[in-house]
Image 1 (cartoon, rainbow, N blue to C red):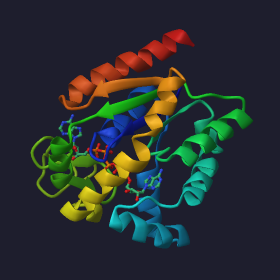
Image 2 (image 1 turned 30 degrees about the vertical axis):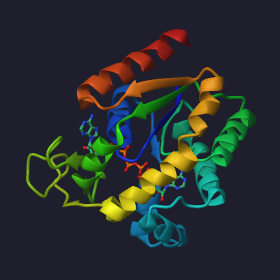
Image 3 (image 1 turned 180 degrees about the vertical axis):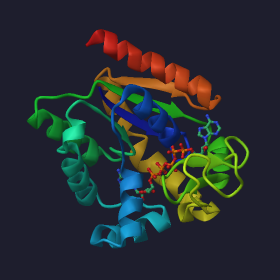
Image 4 (image 1 turned 60 degrees about the vertical axis):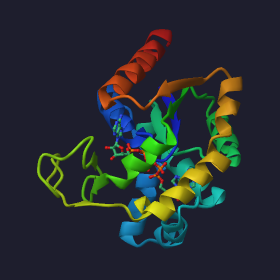
Length: 219
Ligand code: AP5
């Protein structure tokens, strides 16, 4: 399965992608997670990316396209992937099509998870993330069983710097201006499915599973 998850910051892409990756045994390729790992490791990429991320702006296309090109060349992506956070601009979408074209592959499904803006702000302001395994929680909607600690691995929970109110506002603006328009490209190609992400995690998960099961049948 070759799938893209689109949606605004806080729409639940990471939460859903994690569950789907587990259920369908396909790698979740999250560019946000890859960049945060690079920041944590203090690599050159991390140092460059951090200033864009902290401001809620997009990391330059050339950097992101290079990163995804390398990641898709890894063996675990041969059997399919779930892209979470890429593409985010028209040039990234074009580059992805070209990369897949080079290996005679195509995307099979693009899912646009839609959530009203007020809910996005509430989700992001209450999000807590595990420093060790990256699992995402919410202080009200999805609390960890142990306060301040990850219920999956026991790691420390923290609030992402880019979840601060000012940065969230900029991320939502950047999403509207640069990322939202690319869904039209996938709509024209007949690949786009819109999913109401404003419901419970379980309800969203069930609808996504139906879409993915449909792909398995169609293969
Ligand atoms: P990235 O990490 O991709 O951030 P994002 O797209 O802004 O998405 P988020 O991780 O904030 O949200 P999400 O949709 O995954 O929601 P989540 O599941 O966590 O990117 C970070 C930065 O990296 C970017 O700003 C940019 O600088 C850079 N970057 C990354 N990719 C790039 C690219 N391709 N090009 C250029 N730059 C790039 O859920 C949010 C919260 O809501 C959680 O607390 C969760 O528990 C809760 N929640 C989830 N689902 C529900 C539900 N159904 N009901 C109630 N609560 C829910």
